[in-house]
Length: 127
Image (cartoon, rainbow, N blue to C red; front, side):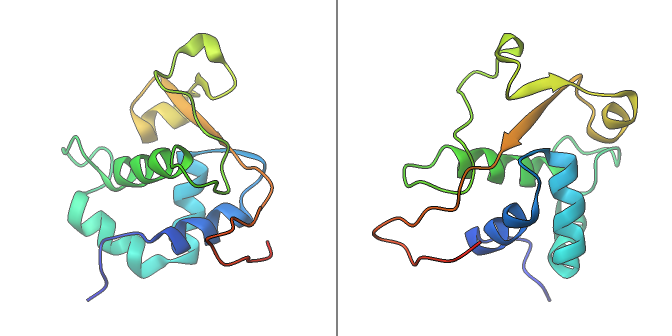
């Protein structure tokens, strides 16, 4: 049975293949393609948006990305601001009709990649 947990290594593997700016919906699609068994385990454990649960596999991945972007050691994502104010514009935008049906919120976070840098305490991995 595959674990319904996502490791930092799995997050980073998918982040490396993402464009410079992407949403959780883009990330979830790429994650499901790269790690189908883990994605299926997440859906089985948390459900999918629209399945009657407030916390879903998308929520789990979104929380993991948000936490990853705010961690103290530099990562592959630019830090997202605290508070998510729509006026910030750069990290938050209105959803399209299709996105709103899939995600549920009128606003969606836009994650931004940064250069793959090596941290002294981490292994250096080429992008």
